[in-house]
Length: 400
Image 1 (tube, rainbow, N blue to C red):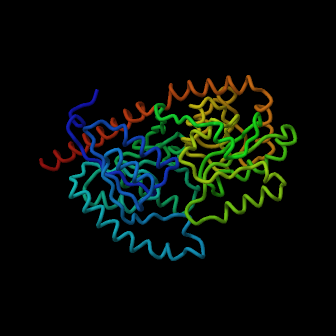
Image 2 (cartoon, one colour):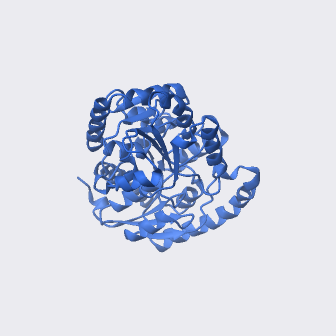
Image 3 (cartoon, rainbow, N blue to C red):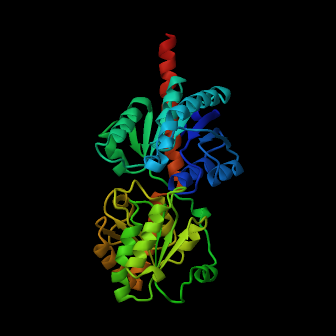
């Protein structure tokens, strides 16, 4: 039962690094949509976009200004000017965060991804407690990784980790806690499957294997492409859907993957759909859902969307998929960056419809047992309460 700390209204400033509708964006949207009325959300974003629109539709106040986000995307010869702009963005960011906190009488700042040290620093300078949501497994021993981890440990009253795999980065820090991301079952999209089949050119009865997520060099779309020839050797009518697109103008990686499919002579069996707001409906077309991440996956909310649809999941056995997928029951786990193992797993499931059905139903039950939005919100609110109670105690000690 909640104490008086959260029975009274509080204002929380949420700070996020993009305005799209991929995993972390959707996770933030779902959380804010399901907050109780006593929590008043203010959201800071670095740009306009579909997330900003959806947040406003649900009554959240959204402010857009530079957040000094140090994206890997910037560290490219043709975009290095973006790195040079970061110090100037940091100055703007600190001022705007400070003004927001004071104007809105903010009680707590919730940083939604790891790569936002500047807003976190600004919040602490204002004396407002920081809850830092970590949704990434960073490269070990990298300078930026070490800096971000140490900054979070120094600034954050609590570090919310979306999986145990993420929490391991904090080496037992008692302020780090696992709070799994969640899915909103009532939002389950129902698609016009016949229309979608026609749009993507899928023959009736052809097996369909799909992967959903931003196209980049570690999500493993290329691993699925490399697995395709072996799968087609056993199931020649199979179609592969790659749902998602690159970040902004980083189109080179998509062209590279399209060329790879062409070189492997499977381009006519692979559909690049681009970004789709109806991705969840498209998942209904899949016989098998794939998450082929080459690096440890922090969580992968799209796995929950596939499980909610009753689809068996094949994921790599590094990172959070080991926590989400029950191997042999709700799906299969394969080594990362191993096209042969992925092809074998896909072929095994395509050849056994009864097993696919059983795995899909167990996966759907698992979502309702462990990954509901109600459970996540309850955990987050408890953390808010603990942090605000600690701040109140500190204030009382100072007064003495």
